[in-house]
Amino acid sequence: MSSEHERGDKKGQFCSIPAKPKCGDCPHPKDYIEVCKPTGWFDHTFKRFVNAKDPFTFEKKFEAHHLVCVAPVTQILLSNDGINSVIEQTKWCINNKDNMIAMPLWGHTVKWYCEVEESISVDEVADVINDAMKAPKFKNIPQHDYDHNCKEGYTWEVEVEVEKLADKVKEQGHKLKGKALEGKLNKLSSDFRSRLLDDRGTRKGGTHAAWKLAQKEPPDPDWCQPFSMASDSKVSSKGFPVRVFNGQVAKWVNRIAKAISSGV
Image (cartoon, rainbow, N blue to C red):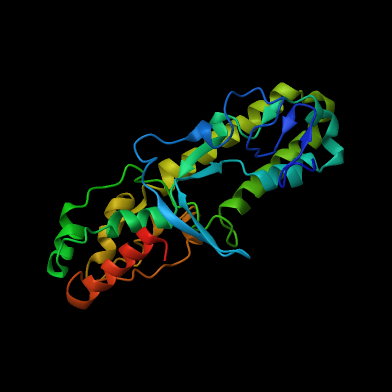
């Protein structure tokens, strides 16, 4: 792997490096973050805390997600000496627009639903959250930090499909040309985009409807499904922290909102 990058690798014109700035010989006009910059919610940020040697916070705008992920492509395809000849004749960049999607994090969602003006009284918090809050522009997109890398979660699914692809390349040997492998990778990107947006983000009526389901008594135990990147049976359960938005609970919501806004 090139020393100038922490992840990914490159063989010929096949590149799995999520480089920013983009590689000098990259054919794409934008890097992997700019190429999927969202419209409508780019300015909805939250302060993300980084627990480093010298801790710091920064405004997190969105997560640039590779639909066919960097690690499986690098470890299963580019590290497989048995398919080198096909890899080296394939022109494919992991940062191509069709393999990228902008995704929110839990911080974006919590801040959206819990962002309360300081001038609003505690008794009014319930009305603001339950009635006035409309669905965010990033509705029905799963959260990038929910079941991405859990056991048999999203990354595992990508690994399974990339393993199948590697096996097909081995079976077909020299019969499989670079263009054919490029097409198969692009189809994988399309398939995983559909899994996230068409299948998962719309579960329980979508993320906005599911958030409201969690506020009901009794709460729907599957409210968190559309927020997860995992398949139905692999969604890890999340407890919704608030049931009734009034009194002491409303104060708690206000504290959460202010903490997220200030980066505390």
